[in-house]
Length: 137
Image (cartoon, rainbow, N blue to C red; front, side, top):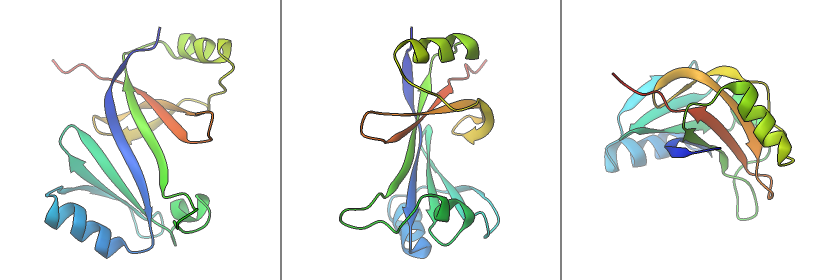
């Protein structure tokens, strides 16, 4: 029923945005694709067909994720998987039939631009975003 097409994006939380941007942009060669205002605290980097999102801990998004990353703390905000196109109601029903709750579907930006997606949690509490793959013409 559910077919994973690839990784859409991963979101890293950071207390040192400059160091993270230097590493991913200057060392690994990921160009900045999109930045949201400082209060939102999001920088999106292009990594091939996917995105790497950097979220500042002292921003609106960063504060929503809890404490700063550390040895025993959470550093990855969420991972987004591209899935084969599937009607939202069918996807929701499929997930619920397996005991997996999902968030409301909403328009979000990802590696293929804006599109609707939902959030679920794996058994360890990791947040997984499911975003349908958009076939290019």
